[in-house]
Amino acid sequence: MNSSTAIDCRGQSCPAPILATAKAARGLKSNGGGTLEIAADDDAFPLDIRSWCRSSGSELIDLTVETDGTHRAVVRVTSGGERPAEAPRRRTPPPIPTRPLLSVAPQPVEPPAPPPPAALSSDEALDFRGQRCPEPILGLARKTRSLPPGTELELVADDPAFRLDLESWCRSAGATIITLDPEGDAMRARIRTAGGPRHAANTVRLTPPADETPRISLDGVAEDQRLPHLERQLAGVGHGRALVVVSDTTFSVELVQWAAAAGHRLLSLDAHGPLEAQLELAAPAPTTTALVPRETTVAEPAEDQCTLLVLHNDREALMAALMVAVGAAAQGMNVMMFFTFWGLNLLRGDEPNANEPAEKISWAQRMFKWMMPRGPRRQKLGQLNMGGLGGKMLGSIMKRYELMDVPALMKAAEDQGIQFVACTMSMQVMGVTKRDLAPRDNLEYGGVAAFVESAGRSRLSLTF
Image (cartoon, rainbow, N blue to C red; front, side, top):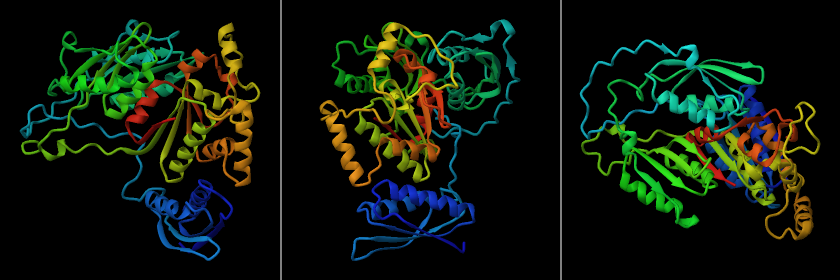
């Protein structure tokens, strides 16, 4: 740790100094660590550098301010990675411990021998070709609920989101992907269902039979009162499953995000007619721990994961989302940005992507796409746009003070390896094809399962 690096960030505004610090720190780590000296005159720098050091595992040795307003920081950077060595980041969540039904300590029992893997016959293989997100994952979830633990089954799907969604679903459900191979325009997979605590033979059944599942209707409830009303209804249900029904199918995005934040598991979602979503409710926290083993009341810590749902394409909302994303990545978090509906416009390119084939879309989809701005440079202000004059004024101000606008923040996000995920269902609705999206190494295609799995294990999850 004898190497030393100095960087000058004077004249740069948040988040540029911290991004430069994180980049220089990565260079030191690759060489075994060392000392980093930073000069910056941004007023946010002292608080930002303290926060960055705490989250990255680096040590702030000295922080001073000079008479001209320059802040000088000396940071010791170790070679132990972005996080302290004793708390490495995990990309795969640990198994979720089962909670005993009774509030008494269970007697130790000998664990049963795992059942031999079963396998579906070829005529029972699941064929989801022609179906789009979230149908393949919902169909898979319905099928596996009726299978014994450790069952192997084969499935095939041609939805672009299928690979990422399947990987996310398997991590959440404890299933194992045995093979996953392309087959023409489709993907063929073989998986093994979980045989762990969730499916063990001696696990206490906590969910009621299907015919006893309570049904909660949100029709007639004001939009801003739907979630509070749902929470009150679920409080009376307690633990188990519940079926949520509402005629407004656009409520699905808000419901999925709320369920992930509340810790409820989304078992099925059908928005073809009225929206019907089946939830497996999280166990309520006990009011006393007198008779409950301590380890059953401790919540599983979230990972250093940040998941951002980008729903809107207002320029100021996109700037805020990207600033949070690059800031979280600079502090060592794994960041996923899930672009859906209007947010997809940020990913569109100025020219068609020649690496992707042209796809046929309807006249209505073509008009829809034509009326929407494309790419990082064309997004409008949600407030005070004034026919584009407000956007030009904002751009002039940001250029004068050397602030990072949307294109610069996009470049910083790509440089830090932030994961961009385009929602394939929204692409189909909006008429946006792969050929419309700018080629990016960090761009993938996913669906609701990918978002829910990532949000469920995130320490930070926001919507823009």
